[in-house]
Length: 284
Ligand code: C2E
Ligand code: CA
Ligand code: CA
Image 1 (cartoon, helix red, strand yellow):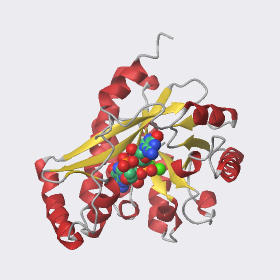
Image 2: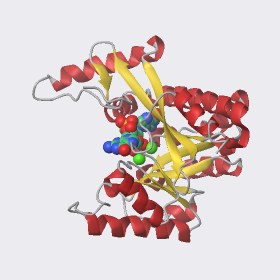
Image 3: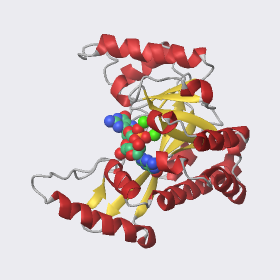
Image 4: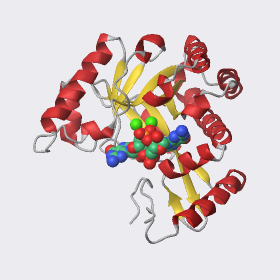
């Protein structure tokens, strides 16, 4: 069965399929998918925990293979990196997402949700990234502060100066930088001192154990509390990901977590849903 939000995938069993043959099928599919329009974007609201107001939306890429159906992003994004297609694909996501967000901004002004786009490490190392992104923002009419970039710790950790300069340039224009899946990478936090990070996103794997009864509850609560304290101590905001229950949402609110995202609030969906959610909040 397919989930309402369209975010479940047919998982390939490597024992049933010839994994190598599948890889090459997906590879050639990926090459033509950019032309044939088999990619789509879904948007998942990011809400402010204090009042439940949607303040942002994460952009999630979807690929529906003509024969194999929906493919998990973890699979095709890795493959796109290996094949050297991630630059082109990432550009498509950024342009499309920014154009959508520019529409929200035209309609809702400062009440419009910001857009949060995942950037792979490869994209961050692309020398033209900052200039190109600023040009795109200009072309579609999206103010820089309405764009957030999500980067994993491993993408941020490298010693290279190019990515740091690119992030600095983007941040100076107002683009926000968030650390995705904070706490699942390396325990080296030096990049927080060096880079213009604005937000930490706590991975859903830590949120799972928050409610009593879960085997990892004490550890997960401590970890989540520590990340919130660290973020606030550094003047950063925190978003909890993968919030699936009311209890988790309630606990996170009492722990002082700023923002949250997950099936409890909304599954990734069409951009119209974001528009409606954000637009409808004026009257209350
Ligand atoms: P992520 O950035 O950690 O994205 C969050 C994932 O959690 C998404 O999976 C989302 O659908 C899922 N999710 C949201 N709410 C819940 C919940 O309450 N419970 C659970 N169990 N899951 C929830 P998705 O869409 O399959 O994306 C997987 C990963 O693929 C993303 O993880 C991200 O790393 C990558 N990805 C997706 N789109 C892009 C893209 O455009 N560019 C790049 N570079 N990576 C992308
Ligand atoms: Ca993300
Ligand atoms: Ca994440």
